[in-house]
Image 1 (tube, rainbow, N blue to C red):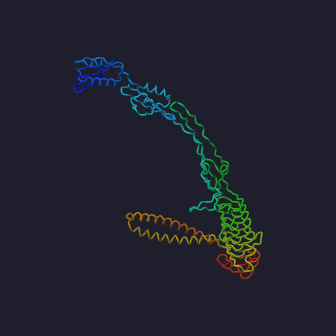
Image 2: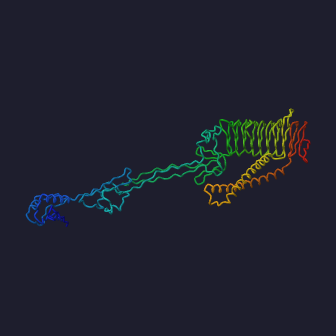
Image 3: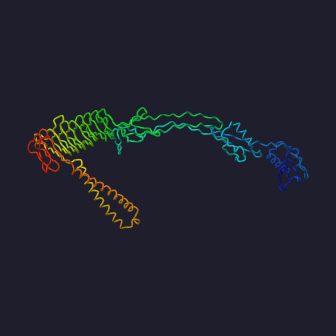
Length: 534
């Protein structure tokens, strides 16, 4: 039983209203002075309690009494409002939210109420059972997650990640200042041994999604592919690796590395400069202003027409023509038809079938001229570590020609450069050591930050220079030993040695003042010996 007390103006607790199982009772503790106010307050209270069937005449009669009255049944069968349960499902049906609205006087929500609401909304998957079982934990008037579906995921197709840049292939190289070098067209992609060329990112299966109504969405299988290995590559752990250094080729989804490339044209505007690490065959010529650079061998089926070549072994079928600025550098041997106005450095031998005119040549081995042709050497400076052999050296016009043998000219050049650099390094080291000595007399920790950084930088540079100096000294000693123990060179002339030619064999100089035929020149006891051609 529940009781409410009503006071009217100066009459305290004049009315008592009892709410019992069969209805609402009103009791008067005294006669009512203000009946209208009392009537309104009783009706308002009964409405709050959801009593709709009120016996108004009985209530009026009761309030008209001239003295106190016992409890009188005034209203029966109160209408108790039902709680409202609203369920909102997200557009993707992966979440459902419950909102409970309870009017004043309404009954509490039960788990059965929630179960019925879920069933009406067709919610069957991912229900938050804890909230269903304990409705009192659900805040009224707020959206609360009542069901959570399973979010799926789309499948991921297998992906090929290529580590070499194909976008710039065949395009002029961009320079730092924004201009482009039309002589560097990026025709080839060079890779090193064991370099990773590409990687397969494996496919990932998708995950089915299940919405709060239990519907399952199917997912398709991802697209996949097989890595394909061509020549000189291998596949390890979904990676494509090069078995050797060379040019990478990717065609029809197959990776290959080739150690030889063939260029079916001149090296010029159509190809740009060529810089690779493989053997190269050039069907045309190397034109003025362009170069070929490789650590491999080069075969030029045309000629070198003012261009430059740096290679291991070099064969030029139609001869080498210089332009004043071009250089030919070989770490192996060079074979060609003729040489004219060229600058050549070759670590091994130079074999020229016809003639050498007005050229500067340094060869670590021998220079052999005229096996199939005229065998003429005229003008320029010809230096060989071992032998210079020709049919004719000089000409009837006494053109100045310098021929030197017996000392490897490339070693001599390296020797001079090392001595020069050694002197520069020693001067720099002396400066650094003097500065460090001055700073060491001061407590380094007390120096400003910039000074401390200078001290540490100088210390690092000192150790670096000491290492470079030691390395240079060691190499200088090595070269000196090689030059001192080198074989005595010789100059062999099968036909005519003309006046105007200057001969150096070892350290001995000989100027040709009269024609000599069929001779071999060597150094003996600081003099040039002339003997028959052999």
